[in-house]
Image (cartoon, rainbow, N blue to C red; front, side, top):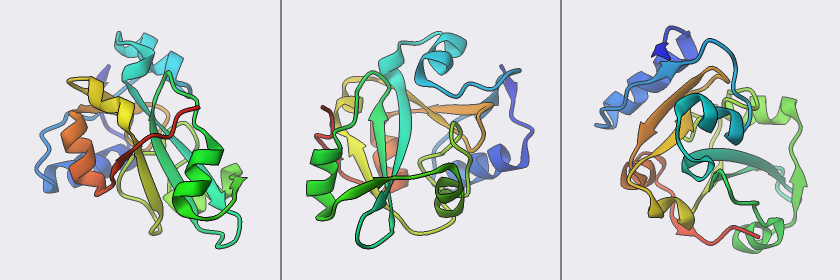
Length: 160
């Protein structure tokens, strides 16, 4: 891993700094698009990866994002109940338009549009978690408390 040089990753680093989070944004030589790939590259457990899953609200069309523990499957039924509307799968174009990021690099902050964001309560079991920093090459570590603070989202049960 090396210091981030991609403009999107540097933007995330600046947003983290503005939020008072002293997190180093780092880049891999090769993209890591899954939680397992990221965990292997970092040297942490898959569960410590804060993966971003984006859905489309079935009625509103609004983006609904869940930041989940890498070892959890997200329950669409639970998330739909929490946001009071059915969910649809989000394609790559929708994810890019709503978040400003490509799939595999969706950061938990700095989104292109306002969205509904939920945090998987299971992430709280770790001292630190790793999240994407805007590209499939970039990540950063932060505490669960910092994650909650920078997203403004609440902890909830979202796993299957």
